[in-house]
Length: 414
Image 1: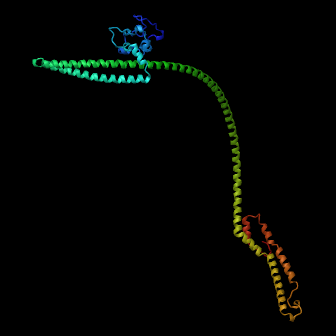
Image 2: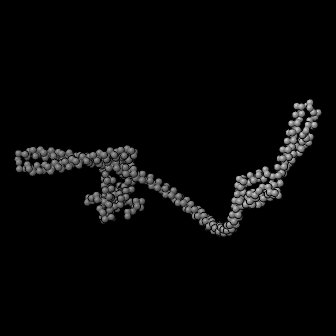
Image 3: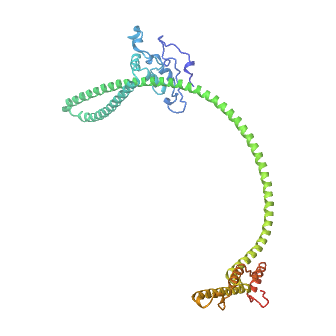
């Protein structure tokens, strides 16, 4: 594992100029792959990236800040690549790419804003892609033409009359090849410009990364405070849990006591229910007896409504008291009527008698007798009803039996 950048000792470059922290003081990756794959994947993905992005010579300073005595010197990249090295791993690729642009080039792109840098990157990348595609097409065409021309040259070698034509075609082909080389050179220049823009974008990304690191540090502090609060809350929750557990045990004890009280109440209720059942059994017997009495009363009521009233009326109608009172009343009324007739007749025949008292058949005490008869009718009492009242406590069968007998006997008893 490579040492952290802050702990690694920086070594001066052979020229005595400040180094980027990547070239001469970088540890070379092991020739043996770490993961058993190719050499490009054998070095860590973040191998010395921060050192390269944060270096002074990759554009963190302005071109105007360069030493005037060194501004016109040739730019010589300082790296640890040798002539025998090939770009087969990430570190070699990084060193090769990061030293392509000059400090002034990097300073130029450093001045761009984010949107300007993005637009430049998109423009250069699109142009580079188009040039690469066109270059590839022309390379394929030139290769095809080259093989075609080789075949034609082989066919024309035996013909002296076509040498001039062949030379012309070869000259044209060389011209095409030269043009292709020029286009390839232009594509390389555009590609370099796109790569420089990519470096600037990476520098900006690194700055954003540093800002994210600061934010991450703040978040760690906040997380530490949150952990402390969480610990305090856990402690408080534990206290609450202990209290709740104690309350739970207390409630369980109360529940057991309530269950025992409930069992006692159930037993008491069972005894009360058994007693009530016994009383209900007694009440059932009484109810049966009362039902029989009520049934008899209902039958009595029905008989009284259908036959009893008629029987009582017959008793009253055929009673000797009513017969005597009515007879006396009728006789008295007849006598009074006779007197009234005599009076009226006397008035009609005044001349034949001195007074109506002298008329034969006139009764002077008829009015008094009528008054006595009326009072006797109002006050008369039927004795047979008293005998009927004696049957109130008798069963219905006895009352029915008496009602079927003669109403008035010789001895005037029911």
